[in-house]
Image (cartoon, rainbow, N blue to C red; front, side, top):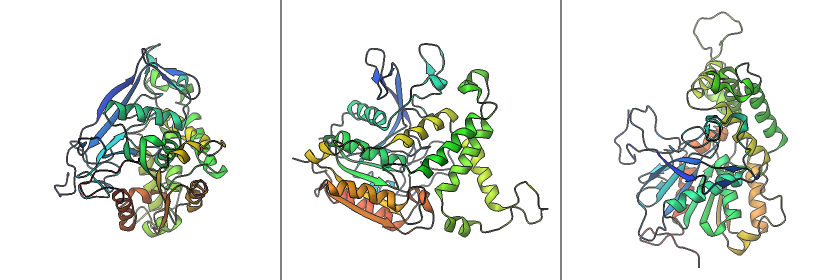
Length: 386
C-alpha cells in the first residue's frame, strides 16, 4: 500500500525518449553503431530557472529508472526510496532528480532483448558489447534533452558509482560533485569469477539457445535464477545472514534432504524466482561484462581532464561489504587524492554488506545529504564552478 507520509513522492511515472536514431546514430566505444536508442527515465522535483539544481542517479546492475516514489498498484516503492524524496538525503524539495534505465537494460531502455530494426527480431547476442563510457554518453544525451547543461551531482551505488566515476573523469565540466558509493574502479579476480559463474549458469541453460530464446518463446529461467541466487550471497555479509537466518529451518517439521531445508535456502530461492519477473538474461550477461572490463585509471591521461576542471568527490563504503570492500573505495580515494582533487571518504558501519547502500542507515544518508547541501547557497541553488 502506498504511504501518505510527507516524505513520499507519491505516484510517479516512467517515461521513454528516443535519443539516437538512424539520422543521429550512437557510436559505441567498440566502434559499432546503434541506429535506435530508446531510454526509460523518471524525474522528481522541479528544475529551477537556471537549471542548476539537477542531480543524476545512476543505478546498479539490476536497477531501473524507478528509483523513488510509487507506481500505481506496486507493493514496494522505487529501489532508492530511502535516499530520494521530500526531506530525504536527496531532497526533492530542493533538487531536480533524474533517474534512467541503462543502455543494455531491460526495463524500457534499448538492450539485447530489444528488437533489432535491421532484422525485426530481438538482438540477442548480436547486440554490440558495451563500455561504461557508453552509459555516460547516453546519460549526457538525456540531460541535454531535458535542458540541463550542468549537474549539481551524479550519484550512484555499486555499478552506479562506477558510472559516476567515469562521468567525472571523462566530462568533468558536466558536474560539480560526484558521489560514489560501494563501488570499485577495478574488479578483482574474485569479483570477475562470481560474474563468470553467473553468466555460465545462464549460457548453459538448455533454454538459452545461443541467445535466441526470445524468438522461440523460451527463457533460461533456471540459469538466470541460479545466477541471481549466487550473486545475492555476495550482496550481504556473513554477519547479516547469521543475524537474519542463522540455522533456522524453513519449516517447523521437515525431514532432512536436498530440498529447501533451511530458511536461508528459502530466501535465496525466493530471490531467484522473483528476479525472473523483472530481469532479462541477456542484459545480465552484457552488464556484468561491462563491470569486468571497467578500469578508468588505466590510462596515464585518465585524470588530466578532471585535474583541469576539478570535481568534488564523496566516496563511501560499508565495513562488511566484501563484494566491493572498503579497500576498493580506498583505492579510488588514493587515485583522486594523488591528483590533488577534493575528496571526502567515509566508511560506514553496517551488518548488511554490499546491499547497505540501498538501506535506511542514518549516518550514511546524513553524510550524503550534508555533502550535497554543503555547496549550495541559502536559496538552495547549486554553486557553479567559475
